[in-house]
Image 1 (cartoon, rainbow, N blue to C red):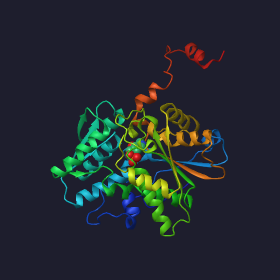
Image 2 (image 1 turned 120 degrees about the vertical axis):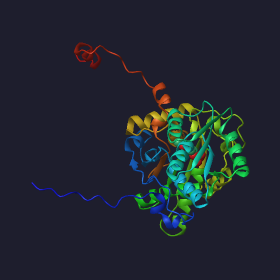
Image 3 (image 1 turned 135 degrees about the horizontal axis):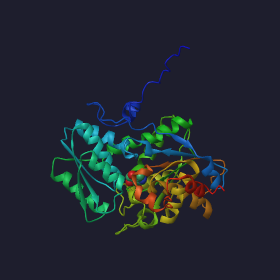
Image 4 (image 1 turned 180 degrees about the vertical axis):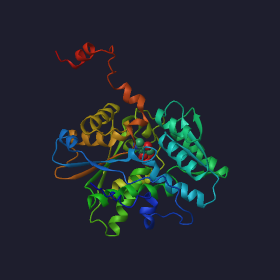
Amino acid sequence: MSSQPTRIPAAWQGVIAHYRKRIQITTAVPPVTLLEGNTPLIPAPALAKSLGGEFELYLKYEGLNPTGSFKDRGMTAAMTQAVADGARAVICASTGNTAASAAAYAARAGLKCVVLVPEGKIAAGKLAGALSYGAQVISINGSFDDGLRMVREAAQQAPIALVNSINPARLQGQKTAAFEICDVLGGAPDWLCLPVGNAGNISAYWLGFKEYHADGVVASRPRLLGAQAAGAAPIVLGHVVEHPETVATAIRIGNPARWHEAATALEESDGHICAVGDDEILAAYRQVAQLEGVFCEPSSAAGLAGIAKGLREGWLDLRGMRVVCVLTGHGLKDPDTAIRLSVAPSIIEPNMVALMKQLKIT
Ligand SMILES: *Cc1c(COP(=O)(O)O)cnc(C)c1O
């Protein structure tokens, strides 16, 4: 039997190549890319059912980006711009994922990379990434907010490009996730739910949805549901949180740099922002893994926890709606939390009697 090779569709070239005309960065140099983006939008019927059903739920699984989080969408744009501007080095403050992403894209571009992380508050997979890609990792006895203040000053005083999400190129890259969702669904969802930390991502999504709507690509825009951790909820509280604390380390931020843009996005979209407790975040984190087989990091489950809370408390009505929940980072980023929350494996002798006992088959 002769077989023909199956033709693979033209390969994905990354978010800048795919959405070139919509990304407002320089075109002077080829994109610095790891072929990020084009992440799956996974239907989640079992999870929707457990939340009371009556709505369509999709998971935008951003953990499948090259370094395991959505930060890669922004980093391809920021790093390309940095190269075009002639930068020799980049710097950022990070709760972990920005550090790993910046380190990878800097390696790709041949730039030096310096990252500031809060000592003891960065998940193992993120630190492993940043170190492996060859970044200079500096651990500060302080918070992400302290780190951001320091790198902003460093970028003023030294010839080093800042790649945090206060860099507008980051948002240009990150808004492509909104385009992808619309392109796959054939329109905008009714609600988009996501965790909010420094508030760059919610601002970027809103940019993307607004742009597609303004250009007539889609007929509507979603309402935004942002979720902050209860111990790090400055936007919900309306004031800076001096000592943010949460198990969701990626959103452990007390003074979001994109606070104003996020507030505007929430207002323009007729959205809502809520605070969810660590217990609610971890419950959602386990649910999405065990009901749908999708493993995200704890912070990523905050949006889902927000949906659960809204439905339970009655301030959210999703009946008949199409809802997209953004899972921002991969579960393997934080293996310690995953293992800590689970029942330890049982240890047995290598024989069948012992195994059959475990199988509870008599
Ligand atoms: C960065 C990050 C967030 C928060 O995004 P912001 O743009 O800072 O609001 C949420 N989840 C994960 C996994 C992240 O890496």
